[in-house]
Length: 441
Ligand code: HEM
Image (cartoon, rainbow, N blue to C red; front, side):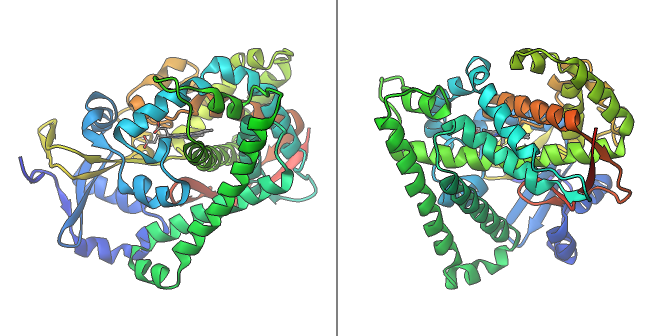
């Protein structure tokens, strides 16, 4: 097996001709080529490099689940991101990843998360109280802080200093911005190196490590147990009975900040936008929220059937992780298509979620399609990925989002804006200019 000769190819020339548009928003370029060439095409970038782009749900299932052992995460995460946040769950492959996943998975089990819900709900409410109703506001920054604070409180309860947390947020967001610049402007790599920009950012993340070390040291000395994620991570043991080394623990904490905050704030912002645009859905959801008054938070979450369907539909149309990439380890074949060792594959979650082959009237926002919860388990729905590397925080994220949606609609009616939803596809699918009017209910 050598080349994927039977896969239609987009030339380097066509790529360069569209480079400016791709840099701004690559989704229309992907869509145009899928339309022209079919569900999988090869993009040649220069003489040696080529990438496979696919919206074939069967291929995604094959790569992420059926033959996942033959596919590793690409260097975008294992090198480009890892140089800032270290080597942990999101940024490693093979044995290192397996060992960490086995160790950390129990902390994200529903049973453990139940204990965190009280803290998480308090964090959500204190951020939502910042929303003002006097004029339209950009809701993204508030929801971004909400998502960060939620992860922080789940990790450290109330036990960390507010200034330290603000600094941690600033540092992780700066590292993320730098990574976006690097990935979108690879031709500037020499400039970033020459000006020492990358080194400065890496040094900046060391400041975050110092703060986290302090928090961990204090926790180790504390007599009290908090029952939060940090306690669980400190107590978790590998098969040989040993616990995580401090550096590893700090890498994992930084990774939870990165993986767990922008994704959730994107989804919640698109939720607000779609509520403003679909008042009938908003009112139906507000009724469910008003009727759902159990004092037990987990019961309330479980009874939020329509909220579950609404957020599932929000993430179908606007999946925060809009593509998933892998590299093929050994020559492989799928459905008559040869995939050579070393091939990078980008699977477009965005396109699969909008495919007419799987979704009736795919561009229309219709939460009712998810009222049958089993629809979420189909091979055409991947907001949290699939297979052994499926998002470890998926339950956490769903609980958090359902609580945030409820608290928002308990207090506010979100009003229409007439401009179309703007998106900014960077590492995640970000909303742009989410300026909305909140009115007290
Ligand atoms: C709406 C919110 C979220 C979405 C849409 C999302 C989506 C995803 C996806 C698609 C993956 C798999 C990527 C791949 O296979 O390459 C992933 C992995 C991951 N997510 Fe999430 N995520 C969300 C929230 C969270 C939260 C709240 C946390 C933690 C607090 C988290 C932690 C992680 C980690 C650690 C991984 C790597 C897992 C591994 O490789 O073993 N995520 N996420």
